[in-house]
Length: 461
Ligand code: GDP
Ligand code: ZN
Image 1: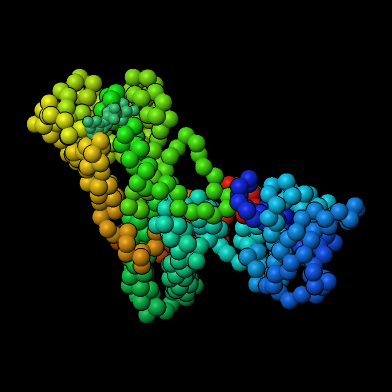
Image 2: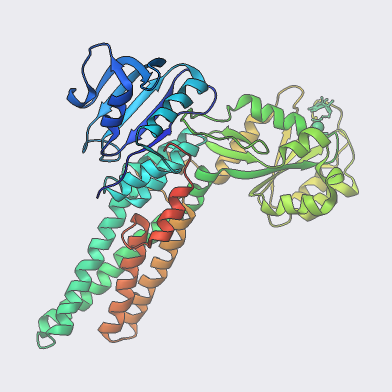
């Protein structure tokens, strides 16, 4: 495929000692040669691939030195996009980086759209769609585990599994075709039925296994939406602070990481908690009273995990009971705080109200009990199974939906076999399974979806 040459700044905006202007396309080296004067005097056109060159970027119209740079030259096809790539490393901050980019654009490159580098890697066959999506996840990963999951997917783990399943299905479809086209071969027909059932069972089991990882995968990818609730003064802010202090929020320094100001991430033993409405807790002190019952209901409804804080040194109140009522049926951990003070709370009543929820006691003042809380959170969602690194996770909603549909389709195949449905009808469901799985790796997706997916990327990726 032939594309024009694109360029963008591919490092974090603002901070960072080094910023990179990246070019990809046929003209990437030619364009840079118009602007770059290397100390060696060599034109980049003549250097070998995957080498770095020190020199200056000069504005050809004024002969003015714009920036001192290191230029990496990577020639097609062994590059991320499979096109020529040049990376101009600038160290002079945002202003000079922008000047370099402007020059590059003036001399023939086009400003890349968000995700366009990765899109090219996909369109040029360097990576498949699920790998491209993993690049996006990697940029956004909040914990090591989330990052490992994205890396696994980027390396093609999920793709390989999906391809294997599709291959199995394809073999069966081919076999069925033979049966339909040559019905006189009775031997083949019988073989096919047994094989069909065997293969369909295998595909179903694999899809089921994958779907079982979805819950954890999704948590790793998106964070566990967590709300801290409780009456005024029970220790919500203290809890938030101790969680934030002890657990470094974001592990990645991957360029393009954008932070959402309203949300705060903490990493509790590998479980990323997305603390919702943190501002509400920090500033208004009491989520239920100050932001109104309606809104707090909404916050609650969207939360995956509720941390309900009670005061050990106070009687249970009507408000406490209302909170219990509001979180019925949700994932709740009850935290009884201020155990350093004399007890006033009725523990029997707490147990009764807590019902199936886990109860933890803490003294945030004395920094006691936070470990227990963290243990409770991590065992609630992972039970250690996440460490089994041979598991392939699915985390992306699009993948989860497609695998769910593929599973339905293969179940249809199996019940078709059961009820003696004609084989050419069964074949339709088989083909559907194959197609649905293909959408995960981008084999059978329409262009509009692809455009939409890539536009979610950060600029410069
Ligand atoms: P919030 O209104 O629920 O956010 O509660 P805060 O976290 O602001 O805490 C209210 C007060 O209780 C503050 O003065 C805290 O220092 C104090 N506090 C928090 N945790 C404890 C604890 O475990 N023991 C004692 N004695 N005081 C605490
Ligand atoms: Zn507070």
